[in-house]
View 1 (cartoon, rainbow, N blue to C red):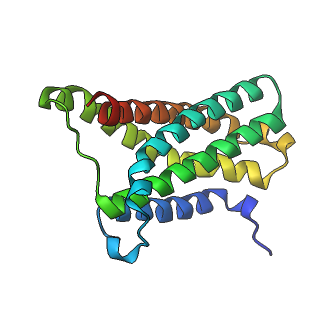
View 2: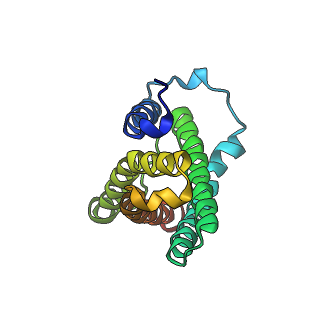
Length: 186
């Protein structure tokens, strides 16, 4: 009996989630030595937060467009928008983790009261939602890629996709607010 990806979506979701989170936490916690990575010019490293802010804004737009497209029954546009959103998320994550592995996290330069009551809670919710989104996104993408579009309505794709898209959208918006607090306001 031949096993196919469509028969193993939960298992593949779990595997991809574990690998992805290991990479994320490995880079964020400094397990990956900075010396092991090629070093881009300082100007490129300094540009990453600004590029990621633009990526986040674009992703908010593509997620919203994908959501609107599927509500209007435009499956091909929905698929294209959500795959574009996934690509933007991957680009964001690679750039973010590269920068964090090289220079560490950016420290908040504003007043302690703003950090305690605004910045850190927003950052915590943003990070939590981003982590929670990873398995949800893998799950809905694997369902979508392993089945014809006509079969997806009979799977968990619509239900889980609504949750994933909502959390993903909020995470990108909060990430943009965190960027504004770090690089524009303070």
